[in-house]
Length: 333
Image (cartoon, rainbow, N blue to C red):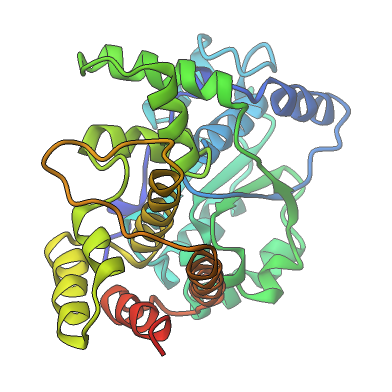
């Protein structure tokens, strides 16, 4: 169980975001007109920049120029994680329990200090609120104090209580355009002094990551473009013993979460399909991707879709290895 201190985080630098100028302008217009929702929930797939967008939203309320400039004292305090008007809670560090809910309530009970217009709570991965904490917050979500703002994000809408969702204004965030994400990836890799990738390689990585630049960057850094070797073996496994061996190696040895495992599964299916069509060639010394015919491809995509719905709708974390084995066995039934 994570401590309350571990759940407090700094925002991602929002000025590094790409492809979201239209969102920032829309939010700036809402804020200027006094129409910003008191409780706003950003939804969208992992790795597309929701954490940075939450920082930008907070900055719009605290920036001296009301533009999230990133340079004034208010923005700098926010980026340093020390702004007195902002409480950050990060569900990616662990379950958000009753102590986090109590801290949120205590923070918003105070009036903004001199020179500030709002008190803010920013919660990353709000789906990590457990049932007790979520129920504790229902009243304040329904009727926040007049000068309070509650900014949330999630990649798993189905895992949130309907009573919480009904009290939020939802804003769907879609991935940035491919050309902008490609340039962002190339810049991040250059800053890390990593080997350069061609535009085609970057585009392929982004497509494998569902156009999420953050996921694509993680794949490039880990060398897992094209999917993990273990998952290619799992796709090719023909016996129960092989399935169990490969799933154990994939999940337990690699330490993947359920969401990460599903992402790897999607990457491997896409990689196998592109390899079958001759769009890519297997790297020297690697296992060839499983050969998928159109029927198998449709079956695997259907199973992956079902698994995602199950994971997104779960109120408790699912066991990644058991789900991997269930997927592998189901397609052989």
